[in-house]
Image 1 (cartoon, rainbow, N blue to C red):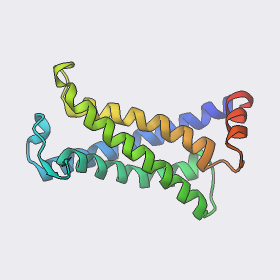
Image 2: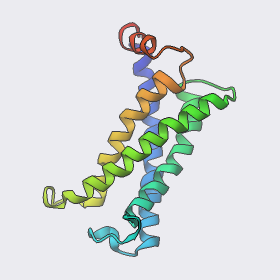
Image 3: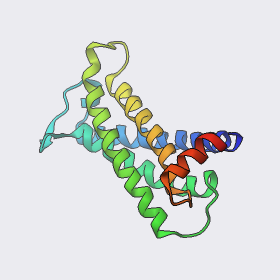
Amino acid sequence: MKKALKQFSVFFVIGCSAVAIDFYIYNLTLELLCHGCGDNVTYRNLFLNITNADIAKASGFMCGSFYTYYMNKRFTWKKKDRNNRRLARFFTLYAVSFLVNILGNKWALIWDQIVPFIKIKDLAFLFATCLSVSINFTGQKLWVFNSDVSIIRKIKKSVFLN
């Protein structure tokens, strides 16, 4: 359990800096695509029901993902080798997390009636990020940076023996 707590602590610190990168890129992209539209909830539909908020969220998420792969590989999971299978697993995991992140952000953008005292784009960003963090830590620990083959063995080992 101590090992998992230490790993999560390092993951958390790296994750916070990745979130800062994500948040900066998200806001910068929103401002570039639609000056001032991030302050209210009038996002433009660009095509196929994709809005400029979706593109901004995707841009930030992807920048944060590249950063977090390198940093977590090196400092959280202490892997120094190059491994294409691990990289493929990471980006498969992050593809799922990416979809959850975009959809969570999109869903939370309609909460402006529920929480009127917070900028809705910031609340949506935070909600989507929390969803992704839980998926990413669990997936990295159990699948991406774990050399065991059996997922059941990974879960048992991770939950009951650490």
